[in-house]
Length: 632
Image (cartoon, rainbow, N blue to C red; front, top):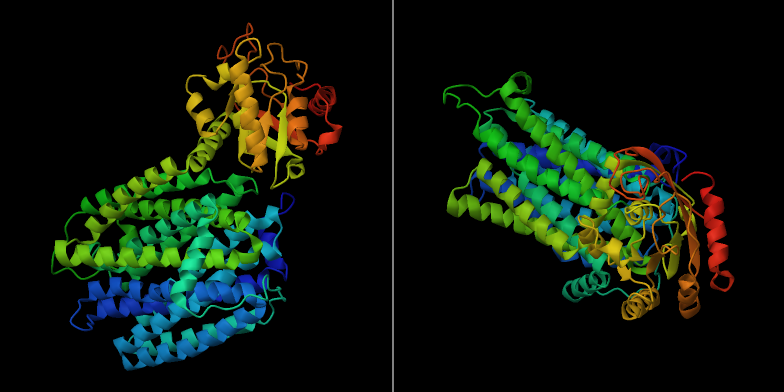
């Protein structure tokens, strides 16, 4: 992946047919849904006495309900059966559902349309676990972020095309409903034809016994999801994104009609801006993350989701009133009015932020889930997503019904809630915020280049040793290495003002010399042994202190003791380019005395793994010195 663009996957059979199958499915969903929503919102249609605004928000809950009821069963199917066959079965189901939906459009029957919407949710429920579980089976680890980015961005491009098509086609007079019906059936057939080219992807657990009880299996799926705390909290983060997105997306048609005084084309244009933002944000993840799962982008995305939603509220509130007798404006007139540009910018930026937020979380779930039940983990994720989306729709309906909230008030509500939830998630899981801090510091301070990181095992105990050049060496290594690392560092550096909080969140292990504080030293060794026994990765600076000359200090024998007591292998790392920077002791033997070195090229090179039986302090020192070379 570092050698080619992520788009190269679109030319490979292991990825391309699946991509186009899900692309056409997403497009079809949105031709149908947007056509139906605009049909309801602008047609003044009612059902059981509910207003059109209430029906639009109810449609979201109806579509999501099958995810709550059937996701656990869908996860079992995806683990038990060969995936290409399962995908083709879901595409046959889509064709049947679209025939029913076409009947609802042609007859103008809202009840049939809502039933078809429920069945569409069922089809998406069955497809969801296969969609995300298939990627880790057909992609390399280095392709996982790029593959997810392509799928996410492609999905939202499909949403964009489907959204525009649904809005444009339904507005055709007098045969818009018939045109939408025909297009939906045609897209379903095209999706099935694309699925026939998907190569065979073996089942991961063919002996799995299906549990037909949706309640007990849902409980089991949630239990599986909660086994890994990082996976579980990633699921909660994704679920919150769906809560946020569901409430926001359901406001676009009412926003276009009641706030912006536009017609159907304006509602479609708003959805198009949103979809473009998500697609670009998803693709930016690959560029910004350097082909690895970079969870530091998640806080960046959540900040944007709050800031730009808040500004959207004030942008809508500041729009000049329009005369009641004025006719609705079209998309061209909407974009020509400079008063609307702020609205468009905010929608684009908050959706771009949503792309930055979602892609790393999906990739993290795929990467850290056990392969034998990955589909059931994804099914559990879909269940939690569905619960959050139903809750979002119910909250919106309650605020509309009992508190007379309008579009602007709902947008303000979701912006404030997002800020509160994001803060709670990052307090609960500081790993996300820590990666963000490391990523920001490194992005603003240095040009980071990495080499040989494939030598670091993805799982199991391992010790990282590196030369010690600056106060931010731990942050540089953390920004480069995908695994969470526990650093052993001098207790004085651990207490560095401004960086101490970061080191504590990294679960760094402060250590002192035997002469200075033998009790603290033994406590540090005990924590290192426990971390390695738990299968974690520990990073050590064997020099024991920062260089004050730029040259390496001798490696101390403490590393030999750690290896002898734990049997863990070692990966040597060489740091280059940090000497002379603000954080190094390059001026009069003291740091923070010069502003030179910012935006320098900093290199992190990992050498071959050294088995425990071959480790010596002198040997590691020589390996690191050789990799570092003359550069400091």
